[in-house]
Image (cartoon, rainbow, N blue to C red; front, side, top):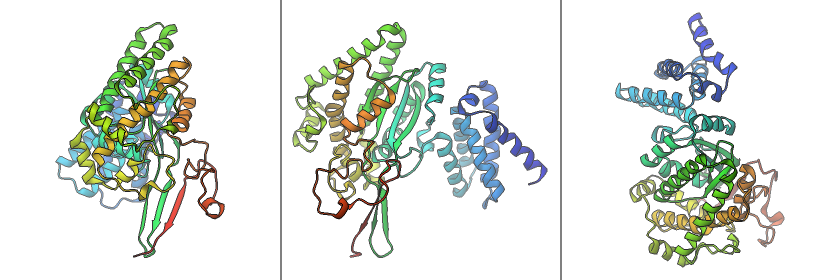
Length: 429
C-alpha cells in the first residue's frame, strides 16, 4: 500500500477504533455531514474500478462500516451518491456494488428502495430515542433483516410495507428503527436429484414492538398485516407515545392499560370472531371460512397496487406467507399452495388483528407490569405464534404427533441457535 492509500486508510480506520454508532452519530451535524460526503466520494471512486484489488475491497468494507457508524446521516449521503452515480452513466456493475454497500449501511436488504436506517443495538436506539423524543419501533424476527433468507413476514415487510413511500416516510420521521433476531430461521432444501436444488426459509413469524426511551413496550403488532392497517397502527401508537410523554410518569402504566382495554373491547364489538378474554390462540381455526367473510364485511382494504407488484415479482413467497399464523401445521408450508396473494394477505391481516392482537391487549389489561421487552417477546412467540423459542424444532415436531419415523425424523444438534435445515429428496421426474 502506497503512502497516500495508507494515509486515507488511517483516516477511515481511526474512528472505528475509538467509537461506535451511538457516539459517532451523536456528534455535530455539520461535522458528520462533511465526513459522510468525504467517505461517499471515496466509495464512488473505489466502486468505479472494474476489478477490485484485495486492498480496495478491504478499504471499501471499512468505508461502509464508517458510513454506518454515522447513522442516518451516512445512509442519506450514500443514497445521494448513488443517485449521482446513476445520473452520471455509471455501469450496472458499479451500481450493484454500491447497492450492496447501501444494504450494509442501512441494516436491511433493499435499502435503496426503502431508504430506512435500522439500529442493531437496542442501547443505540434508546440513545437516539432520548435525543429525538421518538418511540422505538423494534422488529423481532427469525433470521436477519439484512439477509435475503429471513423469515417470510420480514421479506414481505421489505417488499410491501417498508417500500411503501407513505409508510417509509412515517417510519423515518416518527420512529427510531431497530431490529433483533430471536433465533435463526429454518431453511428447507429440496434436492431434485439431478443437480437442481431449491433452498428457502419455511416457517417464521415476526412482531413489531413499540418502545419508550426506557425500553418499555407499549404495544405490539404480531405478524402480517396490509399496508393500510400497518399505516393505521403506526399512527395510533405514535399518538399513544405522544400522550405518554405529556403524562406524569406515575400514571403512564395505567393509561397504557386502559388504552389496550379499549382497543380489545372495540375489536370484540366489531366482530364475533375476535378472540375472547379466556380463549387461547390454539383454540382458533385460522382456515375457518368465517374469517374470510369477516374480512369482506369490515372492508379491510389493502394496497392492491403494491401487493400486485409483489405477486408479479415473487409469487412463490405466498406459500410461506399463507401459513404465517398456522404454526402447528404438520407438513412444510413451502409445499402448500395458495389461491391469491392479495386475499391471503387480507385474511392474515384480519386474523392477526382480531385473533392475536386482542389477546395481547388482554395481557396489558390484566397486568399493568406487562411490557418487559424480552419477556413479552418470548410470550408472543409462545402463546400467539405457537412457536416457543426454547423449542429447538419451533413447533414443527410436536411430541404428541405420531408420524411413524425413526427418531421422529429429527437429526442434528437441538440447540435453538443452530439454524434448522431440512433436506427433502424427490424424484427428478
